[in-house]
Length: 451
Image (cartoon, rainbow, N blue to C red; front, side):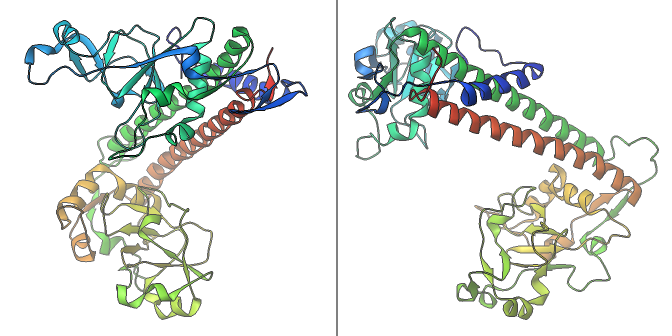
């Protein structure tokens, strides 16, 4: 979370410096003194204080003007709800109220820099925090938190963000879990003895956030560039240097490898592969949840015996081949089978596509299937209202436009290089987030002291 005073992300050139500095603080920072004490908020240094949020901050909630009075709404006062709270600085609001609505409701005008916490809301909103970057009022589901001038608000923000799961566990039970102002006031706060030390901790964590935000922005930009490149190259609107001529309009039957049996086929009927056929190891079964949107999801594993896989030989699928999903969301999404095993067995909702290597590039075909144009065709050809479904017969009738193999390969090389760059950035972002988690655990408990 960036402070209100400095919302801009670090540049890409500063990223490496910030990452190195943050790692140095964690690995080489001055260790906390030997003296610790057990408190209600855990083990903290002896010179730290264990206090409650209500003793260092005022906590209140907002209100909602009557919806029955049109004059109360669409005015010049920002009106923030929990939908805008997501460990961020709030710079805008989806709704606004009038000065009249403000005067005739429990809503209060809050100044920039006020901290907010979601008391309840949809999904995992409850317990999230944010800081106002604008003058605004809030609804009753938002608690406003103003800390005393003797305490660093940014330090408290990072602390509350780090305790998100624990704070959610403090909720009242009822028709829906919710926090209350009293619960928020009772949140335990480990507090360094001086505001200078609190601010030093906050500054390091702000730098970690700036690094993460920079990576997120770069990743988003790179993804947009790839989408634009796909739109141009996969439709023939733009040609790579040295290529020209007409593209071939074809279908899956022509793309499938004619030298292989079952090169374009679906998974087994449900009655042919039951839960009783599952084993602890053997041949891995690719389930619907493994077929991601352009990626193989490896976090769910079930197996069957080699004998059962041999029995269902027509439903075997092999590394480097494409598997499509019969079921949404989205329908006909595809990924490439990984090289972790020699063979796999498809579930009933999978479709195998073994590409003819003499005429088609597998990476090009896989990318073409996942492109928006083909996705729209597949969705329109699918059946079902709430959740789309598509089968072999529907897919066979869908056309794809492909250039000659050499151009396919050139396009695939360019796009795969972009994918590799995105994957490297995602790894770097994951490491930056992990680094910040480690920093919070050390700094917010006093195991590492900066002053």
